[in-house]
Length: 445
Ligand code: MV4
Image 1 (cartoon, protein in one colour):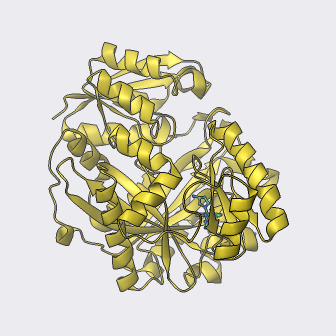
Image 2 (image 1 turned 30 degrees about the vertical axis):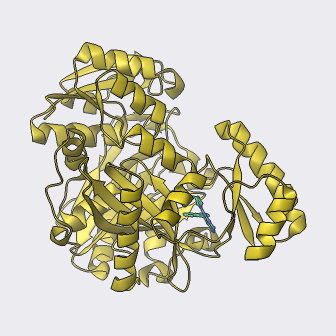
Image 3 (image 1 turned 135 degrees about the vertical axis):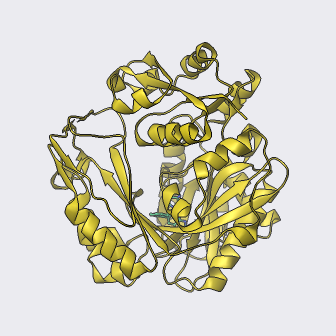
């Protein structure tokens, strides 16, 4: 097992990783930018090194500086968290060449699945349903029209290097298809330096259901059931839950089995998430793989009782998975609310400032993962997530009652947060009934 790990991230996920390491008796080396100097979570690491100025591009994204800190800190492994370098296959390869274990998937699987057209091919080979669409990249208007007229409008043009919604265009006829093809391709070239696009049937009002996977380096793969992440706005998830509500057990089992087949076919190991769209007839379609630990991993931890960060570390050290699929329970219901420093009255823009008062809820069923405290200043440099409130109760109505109480107990002064919006959402009848899809928040607010 590793004796020392470098945490190549900041904020709540850096703290989450430091805590996991401490419980495992592993020392941690933290890194920080000038903007994060003095943050309290850094004191919980064994060492901390400054790696540059506030701008992420000059610090948390600088591979040479991270590797230098790893060499000076004498670590055997790097945990990238999420965002920043977490899905950078080149970074994973550099770690390997420096004889430092990357706590994540092999770089080969990461670059394979990072290309969505390749990922669709892997899924198809594994007999996992993909959304009906083009056979590979679409090269020109003529080919695009042939595909669209075969599968039928509306269609969605997507960037093969994309994900998270960038470089996507809906087309409802040949005219908008031609315009969308140009626009999507140009946006993809600009954002990803890869103009490649493909076409899928546009699924109307889908649910976003994703399966948590753990895979060892010896060919064993288990799933930790699914999360519903449909409650989002502008591709920013707001609320996630496990299990998915109103999804029959047989469908959940089929989705989870499909995710395991795909993981095996991709030669993937460590923790990962296989994303699906679920249509109104409960048909599910693979869309992409997230080759990292995700923000919403705690809901899966609570229903299964498995510590995902500790598992990631054991798997990266080459250990075999310690559990069988049968032993992975899905007990009760867990719901996570993301708390962002954003101003709902200013188009949900970041709301930097100092937290002047903080009262955190507690009691049965409540977990709060956050690096912030009274007196903490949220700067303008990074994403606006300041914490995650996660509840775990036996049933969904009980989980919602617990969440309602917790949000009512919460006091955060000095900055604007998404807590008021979260309260409105969880008190809306559609949400209470579990009638949620990816368009719900934007249709309703
Ligand atoms: C789709 C879709 C409808 N039909 N694909 C958005 C981000 C990327 N991960 C995939 N996305 C979508 N792909 C087809 N064929 C609708 C979305 C989508 C979405 C998906 C998941 C969660 C939130 C979303 C919000 C808007 C659109």
